[in-house]
Amino acid sequence: MTRKIFYLLILTLPVAHLLQGQNRFIVEPYIQHVTDTSFHVLCETAEISRPIAFLAVAEHNTLKANFKQVEQESKNGLLHKVTFNGLKTGEQYVYRIATIAGRDTLWGPISRYAVPDFHRQPVVCTVIGDTQNSPEMWGHFSEMIAQERPTFLLHVGDMIQYGPNKDDWTDEFFYPARDLFRFYPLYPVLGNHEGNSAFYYQYFDLPEPKWFYTQKKGNTLFIFVNTNMDILPGSKQYRMLENALASSDVQWKIALHHHPVYVSSGYYNLVEQKTITGDPNTTQLRSLYETYGVDLVFNGHIHNYERTMPIYQGQIDTEKGVTYITTGGGGGKLDEAAISRTWFMAETKSRHHYIKIKIWDNTLSLEAIDSTGLAFDRWEKVKDRTWLTTPLIECDSFSFMEKTKVIVRNPNPNSTLVVQANGTYQLTTSEEMQVTLNETTILTAFVKNNAGVESRPSTRTFSKLTLMPAQKKARKTKIKAEYYEGFYTVLPDFDKLKPLKTFMTDTLSLDVIQPRVENHWAARFQGKFTVPETKIYRFLLESYDGSRLLVDGKEIINNDGMHYEIRMDNYVALEKGEHTFEVQYFDFTRRETLRLWMNPIYSDLIEFNEYLR
Image 1 (tube, rainbow, N blue to C red):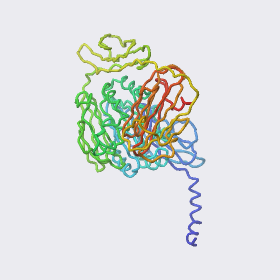
Image 2: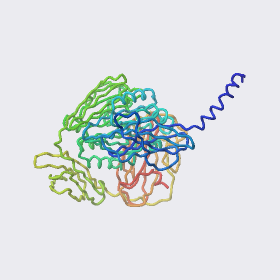
Image 3: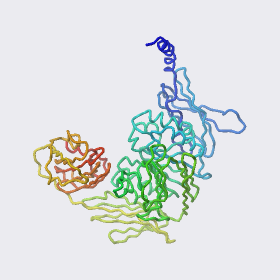
Image 4: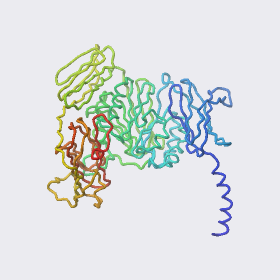
């Protein structure tokens, strides 16, 4: 070590020691959880401290705000939340946060917030997605978005690169947008890069359960969906989404989630392959959105911009159609736009961008704006209030062994509910109709009034299942796992192949297939599992690439083909006792994924391995 470097270290040590004792913001104060009468402000500090909050009504002809301290719970910590209550819509307020750690007081900036009065002003917001791994571009867009003076902000996921990494949240997401978030609340959804990160739940003060929630702003309902999670029709989240859509009669409905329902590019398509026109895990949302009159769906995931034509029942329909917008250009590396124009494409561009939305009365308009400030796409929809709300179909179970009770609810006053089941029509002017089904039935319901206006129909299939009897109980055996190698693009006929290796295991897991080649291999698992009660069970199979599930020799789920992680489910009536299973799988390339869940219908799914214990 040279003498010069030695003296430099000696001089800097006291300064570093002093800095360790000083408090600072890890995340500067930002607005969350806005209502008509209140809002929250959150922040994070480096030292354990206690927050204090100050609020003033903005006034004319004053050089200094008349701050008054707002009562808060005296709670020390690193993460802080303060609440401002008793506010009035349309009023402008000035707030400031401070934290006290011993004798050290850390002051946040003076910020302003006006509680929007959507009876007198339009809904103005911005949408952005996939800002991960690009704090410079995200900071640039934050400055541009602030100039739009939105009432709130929307993010369609992949805010950061890696969910478990705290620095991604604090340094690459919150810090570049610190002067945006202190004025305007953000409503995000989870993307695949966040996963189910604890930091998402820590930093965002949203309605429970946070991975799914709604916000009503003026005459618009915004619904935030987590497409990382199970969203198939038998899932809890699907029922939450349907109930939220069915129970709202607002003028405009807008859904947001990370993965696309319709998109023309980005899904690992080779030139030789037919284009995948949407995420296979979200296709079931198409009919749901169409049934309940959703106007706009925003997603990210694909790093470009695309707006579809209005789509209804697989056709362009400018009156009933749902418009889907991919807005994944918030800063991540851009994906190329589609080589060929799909039938539903209206506009596409491969450029970084955000979207500005304005909603007033019966008119919704938007602009897609790139990083230079150029509005490269514009769209407008005008919708008069002449529709009836679609009835909601509820039931004990849409898969049953003997019978099921169905309740159809009509939310429209002064109207007639029409229910059709297997060719038979029933009408009532009551708010609901009860129907008992004892056979497989396709049930359709709609509402009409004296003016001849009809709602969109709601259709559901109810399936009567045959009970699969338990197998004769035998001595407990392990699971047999067979390993094969080959250039598979679909599942092979395993009965015609000889395995290279055979493993005996206690769990259904690809980890037991060791050693194995990196790509181009297959496996077959065969064994027994035990169900504790005679019930209808839901199975959910996820794989990358293809897979297949058989129970008692009968195919239950066919998830075959070359694809990334796709989930498929089905329902089986099982008698209490032992049953056989077979799971087939092949890997073409990239990562290997095979997961199986099950549980009684409408119960939270658990790992299939729990039924092997």
